[in-house]
Image (tube, rainbow, N blue to C red; front, top):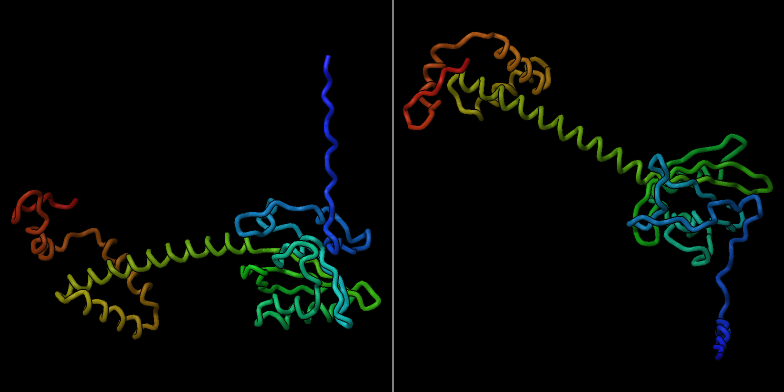
Length: 252
């Protein structure tokens, strides 16, 4: 009976002069489940939580000497992996949108016993803009801490909802104005362009919005419930079934 001897598995060797990436130097209290790798979505950000926001991430440090510690999630938020860069004041400020930079820095450096909050736009290493809220507090000995929450996904969802509502409202407004233009054009025998000018003038004279004027006019015409005989007779020849000049059924 023969036996097979397995060759020993080779041990990986580190090339001379190479060094392992520095590990997070956080105190035990600062290490949490945040240090575990999180699945990323297509945009490279941490996958949102149940309510559409990514898990909170942390940074601590001192503005006086410019030394900072980032949690693994904070590295990811900025578009890095732990050890890629050394967190510095200059790096942190550079990633914040110029219009939001001072507000964020004031919240971080002027935080007292009562936590301060700032909402700002952050551009990560790949150039993606993220919407972030930071809650800052003083730890003592010149140290401050900020908890950051990535609201990008939640903001995108809310923005899409508002855009849909605005588009729908705009479409409804345009439809009402178009109806009113038709009413005025038919009543006065003018073009739709002239009818629009009449509506606009009525809006300016009454100091009432154009859509409100149009809606009021359309509602009045619809509420009459009576046929305008002369107008009905004029348009009847154009309501055809199959052939020109063949009137269709009278609208009920």
